[in-house]
Amino acid sequence: MTPPPRERKGERLVRPYVLTDGRSQPTRNTLDLVTLLIATDDLPLTGLSPEKRGVMELCRPGALSVAEVAGHLALPVSVAKVLIADLMDSGHIVTRAPVPTAQPTEVRILQEVLDGLRALL
Image (cartoon, rainbow, N blue to C red; front, top):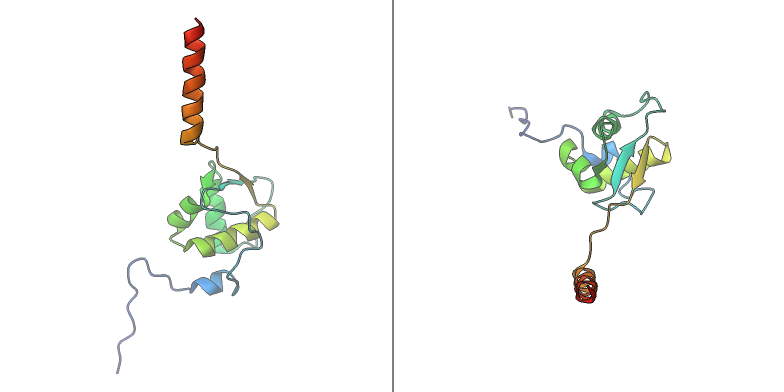
């Protein structure tokens, strides 16, 4: 008689395709790893799956990126994107683009402008 399989640390009992209702692609293609997620406070959490509630609980205190949410929930990013897109569709989550950082060429140009202004003084 074969003993029952033991659960490994960090291994889920539910397969990822069950969490996403068999979908492998999010309904929105605008999500990337650094998209910031903000939970709305005006919609109830009733009827949401435990994983979607987890996303909401993580995002309620402040904005988190898609990558951070996936990491905290120990979900593959692809699964997290499907869940987040569902929450966006239902109005539970809004997104914001991350603050862009200056590109190296922009920094060089800004430094040249600053040097030029200093030369005028």
